[in-house]
Length: 348
Ligand SMILES: Nc1ncnc2c1ncn2[C@@H]1O[C@H](COP(=O)(O)OP(=O)(O)OP(=O)(O)O)[C@@H](O)[C@H]1O
Ligand SMILES: [Mg+2]
Image 1 (cartoon, helix red, strand yellow):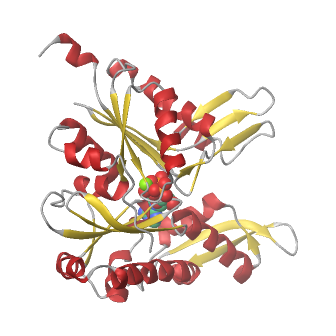
Image 2 (image 1 turned 90 degrees about the vertical axis):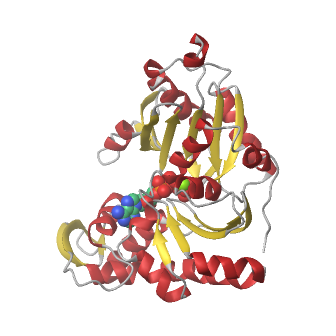
């Protein structure tokens, strides 16, 4: 192996609405941090990125603004996104020499327009990558979950992220049909804030809602008795007040959103070509993304859609691991990479 091979390494980027992951060839996942930037709004200077910026979320002084540069999986703030990628690439520089000529694989939602795809490419090149390949997220997820994507099988993947849920039926290396909805982790948090406000006349922040969701939330009734005290601001008096929130409250709060996800899954199955559906029903549904960690979500989907449903292993990293598997063996996945060059989205 020549010396240069150690210098020119490929990199995989999963740029999510909630979390950004970087996979470095021969190393594995080297970055897994929130997609956040803290700015000093007096000077415009970046103060912190990722995990460090998140720490500032709770007690932000007036001159600091926290920016989420992606909305529902789409880059809404080009410059900030570029700064994030640059920052993380710089951070891992000690582990390898990032060069302009290295290839970057970037995971993207299936429903991006040509212009949005171009902007992902541009932002990655501007941050220092040489060549960029875009890989559709459900494909990366399937490869990360070691589903047999090269064989003539059909799989349904439901990826529930922070900003979007993407429901896809993929077969032989390309997304055949997919549907994307803006109901995912953040919407569940919003649902919880609203429920606590309406039911308890108490105002809580999104971070508290997220804690409730993760600590005591579930999609279906569970035997475990889960509850959590939270403090918020009483809407009538304006004073702090503490309440005890139960699992049943969270379930009620997010039920409608969960229902909308399974309804979309059902309608996608109904509109899919019958020859794909038969195989897919046999293989079952795979759920991925951070949202799939919600207790009982697999059983909820299974019951509603009446198809066997499984959560992939380590669902927060499956996209990044999929990119990793591809970039460690690019020739093998050549057809997938060239497929990704043109949009294969079928709008239903
Ligand atoms: N244990 C858990 N239970 C429920 N939800 C969880 C859990 N852990 C993380 N989440 C949620 O998962 C979401 C983040 O998931 P993920 O990292 O897959 O999203 P993303 O890829 O950044 O977003 P997107 O794919 O929409 O761009 C957050 O909304 C978070 O609240
Ligand atoms: Mg994602």
